[in-house]
Length: 156
Image (cartoon, rainbow, N blue to C red; front, side, top):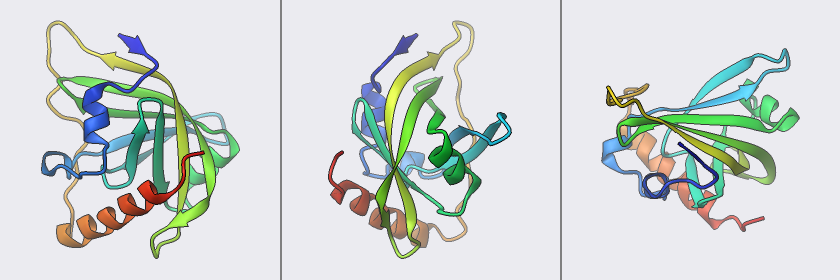
């Protein structure tokens, strides 16, 4: 199934509320490397928000390969497991002038181009990539700060 809008379940998941049920779930961010090959990175629900069904905003490390790829090319795919399926979001990212948090994270707005839901009639996807936080309280506090700063930036 394919659409150009984020489904309601993702709008709720990525509203900045940091649901406990998803604190340890990774969101795979794939970008196009300078050599033309896909490059994978991971986001958390504390680093990305859905501003609307067609617009995402996220913050990532300024010196990362992913940041360089997105500045150069802008093409990206997000993939996560939700509602028994793998959801893939193709988007075009554009760097914003602002940075957020003391870490000076690079901020991108990403225009959703296509959402593909991969669901098999014979199986339910129960999990994707997950992680364990070394200091959950500190990570969640930083994420709350990031989310508040991302939400405070003007649209456009």
